[in-house]
Every structure is written in structure tokens, then in C-alpha cells.
Amino acid sequence: CKNDRERSELIQRGKTQKEGDEYWYRWSIYLPEGHQNIYRTKLAYGQFHQSPGDCQPVFMFQEYGGGYWLQIDAPLQGFEDDRKLLEPKDFIGKWNDIVVHARWTKKGNGWFRVRINGDEKTFYDGKTMNCKEVYFKYGVYRSFISRSSKSKTVTTAAYFDGLVRSKTKKGMFDPLPE
Image 1 (spheres, rainbow, N blue to C red):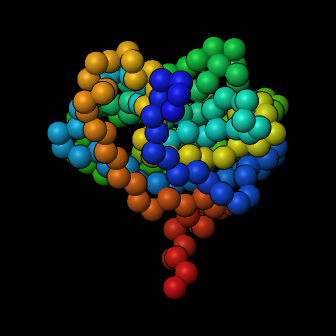
Image 2: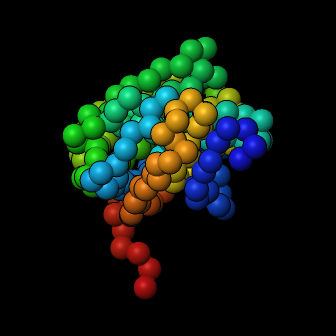
Image 3: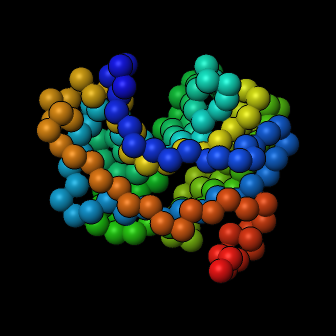
């Protein structure tokens, strides 16, 4: 990208999430042994973004100085809130199963719950969007790459599996169609 970023992401297509929608999301992520943290470069592995295009992401799953973090973005509450989900020893070289339960709303009656490997890791109650719609993106998104000299020489690999979005918790585990 022209603005100090590089990315390889897949974007949710089809029906996006709108005011009042409630959804369950599930995915697994794996970072291989030998993974190199390139902190000061910001590295995101998943984000709940908004549209139209000038709107910011509201929730991002990222790697900072180590481990897996949830960033709750400033448009929701007037400040950025970073919450550690996994230590590096629990994040790198292991598959981790992520489950999110969210109610999307511009009012204060929304929520965003995160479970990892079956354990509730964090929750947020309040406004969960401030634009027209929300959609999910995942992959490797490196921003502010000029902050770290290593980011130009290090390849970042992340593996994803089992991505599902469902209106019900039970629907996340329904068999895939033949």
C-alpha cells in the first residue's frame, strides 16, 4: 500500500452486519514456530471493520510486543483500549480457537465477547459500531512498517481454519454442506 502498510487479507462478502444484528464468529489461528515479532510495526490478524470506507475498524486482533491482543478502537468510547488475550508462549506454535459473540449497535446496548480455546478472555459492553455496517477481515495486515527495520526482511505467516459466522451458537458447529 502507498501509506506505510502491506496486507494479505480476505474480506467477508455478502450480508454485512447492521444495526441490531447479533452474530457468532469462530476461527482458528496458527503462527508457526520461528515466528518473529516485528513490534513497532503493527500486526493485525483479524478486524471487524466498518463501511463506508472512511470508517475505522472497531475491534482488531493484533500482535504487539508479544502475544495476541484485542484492540477496541477509539470511535466507540473516545479512547483506545488494548486487552491481552494470549501470552506469546500460548500464541506461537499452537492452534488457538477463537469465538466471538457480538451484538452490533450504535447505542449502548451492544456487546462483544471473546473466548479462546473455550475460556472467556474478555468482554466489552456498549456501542459496538458507529457507521452503517460492519464486516470481518482476516489475514496478515502490517501497518507502520517503517517503524521497524526488521519488517522489511521478515516474512509473516499465519494460518487460519474453520471460519464461520452464524446467527446462533449451535450454527457455528453445523457440518459444512457436501
